[in-house]
Structures are given as structure tokens and as C-alpha cells.
Length: 70
Image (tube, rainbow, N blue to C red):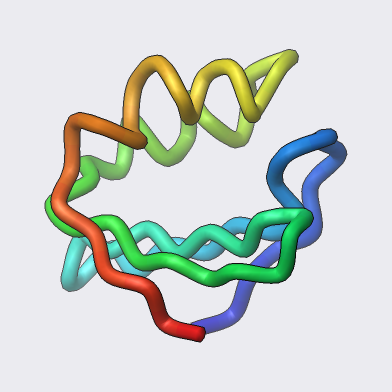
């Protein structure tokens, strides 16, 4: 999945697949995770958030099933 670099102390890059509703997040630590069932609007709100790490932690991290990719 193609990811876009983001400015964040926690997140390095973010990708989204609208067909499967999968959000892929690469953390500054190097881990890559896929979060399932993420609506497009939530992805857009993440990308528009002033603090992407804070938005991710509040709205996505514990609210969606996930798996580590690498």
C-alpha cells in the first residue's frame, strides 16, 4: 500500500485503501500496522488533524482491530 509521509512525532507515514477500508500506519519506531474498518471520513480527519498522533490515539488506536505488518 502506498503511504504518504506525515509531520508527526509519533507517525511517519499513513496510507489508506478505500475499497477495503484499511488504514496503514508506519510509526516513527519503524513498526507498520494495518487498522481495519476505518471509514474514509476518519482517514481524512486524521490527515487534516493538527496533531496526527493525538488524533490517532484518540480515534483509531483502540477502536479498530489491527495487525502488525512488519
